[in-house]
Length: 255
Length: 351
Ligand SMILES: Nc1ncnc2c1ncn2[C@@H]1O[C@H](COP(=O)(O)OP(=O)(O)OP(=O)(O)O)[C@@H](O)[C@H]1O
Ligand SMILES: [Mg+2]
Image (cartoon, rainbow over all chains, first blue to last red):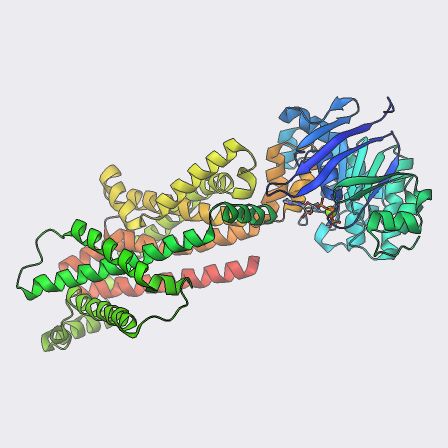
């Protein structure tokens, strides 16, 4: 229990209606500016864990503290205020495909833009400039006006990162951000997450499938197995034994 | 999807599936036997020369069919049990023949009764005078009465405007109703589920009453005329568009919605940017199609006093002025064809 932890997860459990135990008593702390990777087999509960943190999914049991306040008992407006501080990036990019890259980047600040402005689409100069700056950060300044659906997968994910940068959260959740991209593109996207971590000081919690990416980018690795936390430590610890421990006896690592 | 699947598994696990299937088979058999006995009773009383005026012995037949089905189910297979695959063993020959005979009898009596109910009269169909009447109308249709052309065009325009107004009025209401009636957005909270059920109930209720009946109701309310027709169409359009809209909302990709929610956006923003862009074009397409349907319906509604070309048609038909009727029918056909064509082209263009 580091007192200065930005995120504390205590005994978190999630049981889906129908009885699937996706998480069983998971606890860990994340310090500010950490780049933590969450690994585990498909179905081990990684996505569920991330979605519990910003309450896209309601946890069944346990407590989550973000920046010192409890996430689990909040009113609707408090929840919205919390979500402004927590960005999210998805495997499927989840851009609004009919809108331009620029507008999608603006969407990062929906939580702070006045309601009438956002619904009418009369963005202020500031909204537009901040979004443009974020897009330039991810190297897409020249494709601002392009509709999201006409961008390649890697570019779409970079727009999603720009959206998150523009939101400027303290914590960034990334759910397998590169699983839909080919390996060469994976690095270009991961580098922008690294940028968010180093330059913008965001704490990052990132679900990853590829051990080489974990070793290259993460400062910490958390492993889930059937909803239980089975490892929490440095990526240095990754070796054949670790691999079998986390992924099961039949798996062979690339460690 | 995943939640629904898991929950339905749960439900099956609590109520034994076999019991449920048995109940279904029983209801099926009961309906069959009840209907069969009703037919037998009906033809029996005809046979005895009694007019089909007396009260139907529904209670007696119900009790009797219940007893028969219980007996048959106890003895062996029944059509319902066969249909649901609950009975595989071979039945005695006489028992099978009994059911076959019973089913054939039902089929035969149904045909006979259908013939009687619709008062099929081949002689009338082949009647010489009748033929002449049709030929008279037919030739009148071919020699339109152009003196009413102006008036008919005006009435037709009125019809198209009735349809347009009904559609325009229905769209915003259906839009809101569509959101409140969509399962994925509403059943997240308990209060939302309640609203969802209420909205769904009223949508189904309104839709199950034909627009022509609404037109009769509204013409009593606001008086015969285009206003009544427009209200009737608008109400029916709200119900059918509302259902189409909500089904479209239910089939959206949840991803963008999650992404917008995760930025801390207000739920109005979530709907506006997470849902609306995904459903906008389908909504537009449904709406154009609805306008097209409404033009046809406005014509029919005119027949019961909903204004426009339908009312005009009914007036000339009442006077027996067949040349004018012919003119109107031709104009309606052209208008409907043109709307159909235009709406198909428009919808193809946007999708
Ligand atoms: N909405 C849901 N309803 C019921 N069960 C669910 C739901 N979402 C996930 N699950 C179940 O919970 C478990 C954990 O799922 P989760 O998506 O968190 O795993 P994951 O580690 O992200 O897997 P992947 O690597 O495939 O994304 C799985 O067994 C899954 O089937
Ligand atoms: Mg996942």
